[in-house]
Length: 252
Image (cartoon, rainbow, N blue to C red; front, side, top):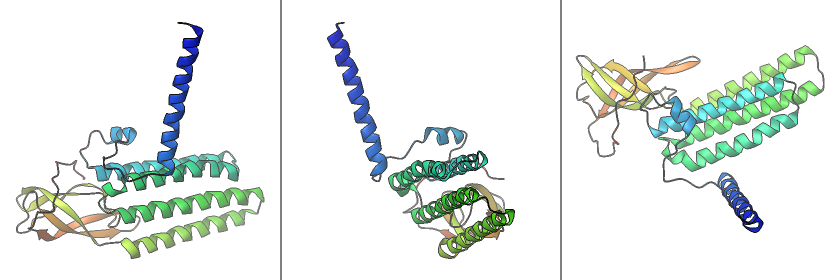
């Protein structure tokens, strides 16, 4: 191969790489709703032993991204990072968070609560870490640190109260998977509004609760823990709007 051909191949590869990078940057900056469900390879591998739905996959992916964001900020604070380091982590995180919610938000069963929750808690976390990094630069007394942490805790509790008052529900919905004697096994999706984890729950049987039917389930709120489904409130006999489900992993 001549030198001219070699240089041409190098130029072509570089051009293709620039075009691909430009396309990815454009998609991140200006996301549009996707008609195809997401894959999320890492999150999918974590759920590989389970058969949850796309809704659960997106919810898990959002949780993992937020946990990674918190871990990165804790590491920055631990290593004595400056505000610019907090910003350097926050910018790509918020860009990606916005991308996921816009690109794949339509696959969530109820999109708005998830959008408000993750934007809200992420913004509070960003301001908390940024403020702490700024506070540490002034070398205040120890009681200033305690007061700041207390103020952040109050803000978090206020946001929790707002979210529950706005989106909170004392019920959720599920699909009957199995009927056994006086019990029915119901699959319940991840429901951030009802604070319920996804999985299969054994509940007292009620009339007309047959496999495949959608049911309304009462949940019992527990302080600083996920709510617990307790009993079936209503069975929906009209299944015209029900989507098919597969057996899901059981929740103890």
